[in-house]
Image 1 (spheres, rainbow, N blue to C red):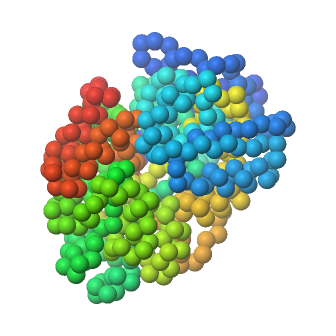
Image 2: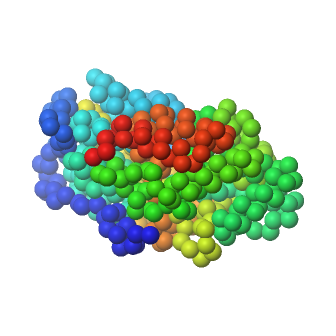
Image 3: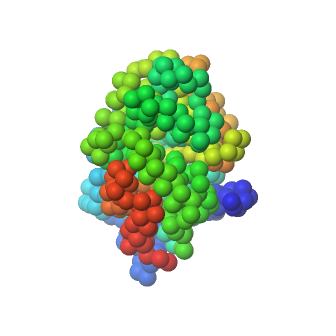
Length: 453
């Protein structure tokens, strides 16, 4: 494995030196390639941290099923009545695929959920947030929190200028139905990957579905990547997700993880109709007692708690060897500001407010179960003792202490999720391709998007 020092070195983003707040001019785009990036429409924006007194409407393009933006917008308007919002929603995969077109239009959304930046920085479609980083004092925030939200002039994530912020910072794990576990004689969550497999085998032997999952829209990849994370070199995996030159998906660790998923498919640990089950259906099935485990994020903590009460727990995916550090997918619910937006200052104010206002931070935790991020010196919102949200926040803190967070592989390029990961995982979890074939096919698609570099 690569050293922890090396891993942390990559996570430390270089913070650009910016002029004093007064008179700073927003850099609208970063150069890239052999030609100059296009200029955004309108004049460059003079940075201000004062909210306008004019009546304005901010537009947000967000994914379906993420209610935090509704509640945050409502609270912001309550505090600042002159600012209202219009929120448009689409599926995760559609939003990812259509983001460049939306941002390049004559009327782009002011703020957009952007899981992967792709070429949007190189094409001058996103506002550079470095001046606001300086103006608002975001240098007090964790570097590792902001590193995945940066993009270099070489179109490599993890360093360079800041082009995104999060509306909550997620961590993924496994939810376990404690009522079913008790019926099976399982006394506690597993501490190793082998114990997890033993518990899944016990469930299957007793006609209980081991893993509640769906892959109509690719979300079985919470399971796929969770398996890969236990075998992959963390540095190598992150280098690929950040599009570093020479990085590859076709590594022994990724193959071993994918082969494990194929073995679980062959053992019948997934439902027969998995490829016709979408995200909302698999969340509902687990909420209704449809199986022993489900792999998902902290954003569903409140949903599962409401449905299952005390009969559910949430834990990190166990490592191969007991006592080893944990590795978990986690990322900001990342949003970017359109370079063409006439309200860049106001959107930056809104983003800063989300990270600093006590009510906004409470909304992020209550609605998403995610950490609110921002300055770690700020007090954490209150949560119910013993709740899944409390567990989720503890898990996020533990992953941070163990330096075990990796991004979602679905965020690697703009097209890889819909174009390769979804169709190939549908074959993998139904036993029609091997783990090696899965990895090779995803890497081939990746090279088609970013080149071998």
